[in-house]
Image (cartoon, each protein chain N blue to C red):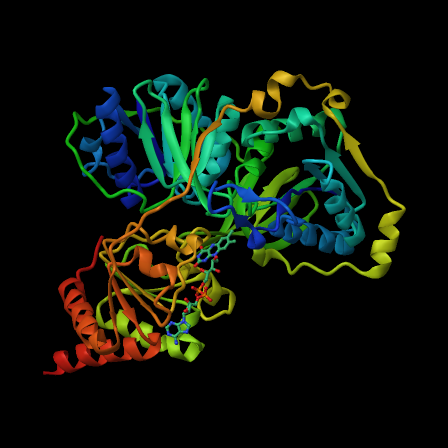
Length: 316
Length: 266
Ligand SMILES: Cc1cc2nc3c(=O)[nH]c(=O)nc-3n(C[C@H](O)[C@H](O)[C@H](O)COP(=O)(O)OP(=O)(O)OC[C@H]3O[C@@H](n4cnc5c(N)ncnc54)[C@H](O)[C@@H]3O)c2cc1C
């Protein structure tokens, strides 16, 4: 059985279920979704993506706190015994999974960008290694479950109808030594991993003021602005905007890389975009190797021209 | 108040060079430094030393060269530095590392009220050891701590930053927190601190000192195995526009943008 763990039903859950389904077909096993969270969660629209959905809901599970979640999940894992267990590499997944792995004395691979199974049922867990310069594939040959957290946007949502039974587990309540005393909602920060069009900028924009043209273009096409680490380090943008190994992975329909050299660590976060457009004045810049369309030109003035054409047309 | 800081030695990743033929890391001339995020963890401990007279122990597992890195933490103001080093520890994955660290804490009777570690290391980027270590010792955990709010008798208050919110948690001690860069601004070592550290000793222990069995250690004790390392070559066929063709390229881009614009994805 392949298990997917999350504390909410979101796009990350659907992406993992899509991948779990593919792998389940290959090794002829079942997919089980473990949802642990608030009583309000509704599973109707996802329950048919898994053969079995196991619900652990409590009014105390509105916000994640490690031990109450851990104790209940561990119980469910030991009951249903999945051989593979996946969770998104979010703050939730990256906290609960190592805790589970420690309890279950098994292996865990962090932040995978690709998964597969071989015919022996080994989970092939692939992630960037050595500062993103190479990819490494990791297996957990003798311990079960084989556990991995997966970087959001690594897979596309591929719904597939399954039988869709639902089980509700009884919750063990527990005195918690962690107490939530305040919560302040955060503006949904730069949603670069949600946008259809991402306009990313690098050092080739030369000055912070010049990046306004990218914001303008993003606004015109209802997209979002991404950035390289160099320009985040230079404080042109907050870290929320960073695309790449130590930032976010994006998978938009259109990715524009303006004034970006194309370092491996940057490419790691955008290479699965559908159409890649690169603007760089150096025709030998590595970014052109991963682009579909390359404009060998000044980044600022090229973006300016594109904006002008789009504006003129919408005025007309 | 006793604070334990977990630290790791990493290669200076910004300088990593890859052999283009073999895809392996060129280690020659590569400096080892303390994991940058661990410096923020240590700095928070140092601030608490100033305000609450905390005693700081730094614990690390790694090759013998880690001694230099640990000496730097003494120069910054840590009171005690402990290195676990043995060829039997080599090749440890996150489970084996967490196990070895947690056993050392038990066997050496290292006392602590608060454990602080960096959110992740810049080399492996797994961010798993802190949590696994804490769970093996049954300690409460708060990850992604972005701000230290206060220390009260038997508890701490910290702010945690997650995707959709800033959460403020009160946690009973002993506990572990893993911190983000924003918790502190690391200080620089002083000459007098460096001099003072020369008179201090980094304590070094091997597997036998800790009474640990080889089956649980290093590569043997690690549930995971790396089976393949490879270079990615994801290349596309780029249609390049330059010089007098540039305009045509711009028109092409505009066409694509108009085609996809405004279709908001859920
Ligand atoms: C462990 C590790 C993790 C990392 N993680 C990330 C990450 O998550 N994301 C990330 O982006 N980077 C990351 N990096 C950094 C990465 O290696 C690069 O340093 C960075 O991506 C370079 O950013 P850049 O392309 O903006 O700048 P540069 O490399 O300086 O490139 C600027 C480009 O602009 C071009 N240019 C200059 N002037 C103009 C002009 N007028 N018009 C058009 N083009 C022009 C130049 O030809 C050049 O190609 C990481 C590095 C390490 C070691």
